[in-house]
Length: 597
Ligand code: ADP
Ligand code: MG
Image (cartoon, rainbow, N blue to C red; front, side):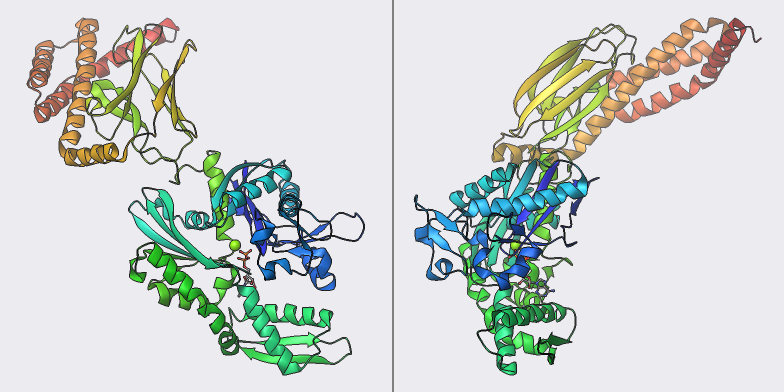
């Protein structure tokens, strides 16, 4: 089982696949969102993490680290003045890195504390150990920041299976990977403290980040701050009362959230002195405060579009991600800017985590209908009766993947089965590409008596292993083919266009091959019946059957599909009575042998 984790600037989430569905797990406080905040008490008591740490932020800002994601994987020299003057210590490490908080930890170490909390809460809920994880990062994170995030995961005891881009995760959560054709997706992510806009291109199930832009100082926090300062002047409260300010902020955030669902709300603030303040607030007031803040997202979006070489109208899907996109005004803003109706879900702050969980499911093989990143470019299968292609793994299947099927022998007394491994989209084996062939010996059996299991397994690196096993003897062979994924785009395109071009004749060819197989089966059965049932035959019956059998033979020789199908049918019908008599006779013999008759 692989956990999916959204390690956010403001909030973090963790989830797992459960019976085929991605589920996010609630933390200690009952919410699926764990605030990305760590409070370090005096002395060496263990840190508080999440909601309890967030409560301590107002009381003890110097000992409470938040937004550690802003620092992870960066050099002290890269930090701007605002980043250096956080409410908690931010210092240069001896190696030029960063140390933060009262215990002078690296951002990786602080992030590891957050991840450790997510992990232990999840383990508590599920009652199992959690070792593997997929962790998301913004698309613009450079290699150092991705490596540092991976390191944080390692410090928290995870094997980090993949670092996944947040916009890609969001697209995955919306199922956009399943749209076959080329799509352009804009992911508009407005969180607590950061705004990210990413343009993705989806092509045959593979997402590519085409451009990114954003503002690392733009988010829901800014709207909170604007509302707090508005309340401040309305209520004229003193500026130096940290606790009071914190309570106003908390009340303001609550009101902001309520105004996403209703037009007005009442903001209440009970003062310690016994008097309390109340204020009716309507959405328009909040929107007036938020409008200039939101406007800062516009140039970022326009730049992302122009970097991608696109105009606003050329976006196919607009995804809204991040808690702040719950505000109706933000949705309208994005729709107007990109000229498409956004795809929203009811919990926009959960889609990145859901995507991470799905990616974990893909990596562990629990999700097989998604087409992300690594997919089989062409179908894989083996040659079966009549020279037909039998597909075991269809084209565009996410790897790693395992699939198998049971085959039997077409001819009596056959002592080996040839496994002819094919790649391609055509119906006939000979029109596809041969990846390899080998023989699997088995104990000679009557036609249809042998059972050979063939299993294809493609690992994460695209290597195809073919296993064939005679189920009677357990004898098996495993043969490694060359990469099943490493096919040039032109070759794939050629194969697909040929399969479209020849679709009709291919279907005809398959039908003929199947009819021919049926004829062979039928002629064999008729021959056996005629030799066994001499005494049961009615006058003239043998001649009638022989004539119809000869007609099948003629149609076969002429490769005339419709005539063959008709001849098969006639022959089948002519032997029906005989078959019934043969069955009665067999029953009688069996009952007699047991002394019943
Ligand atoms: P991040 O990605 O930065 O970790 P989130 O996606 O969790 O953050 O977004 C957090 C922001 O979303 C906060 O500013 C929070 O106030 C805001 N938010 C959450 N719910 C709502 C809501 N119902 N209406 C408006 N803003 C909301
Ligand atoms: Mg986020």
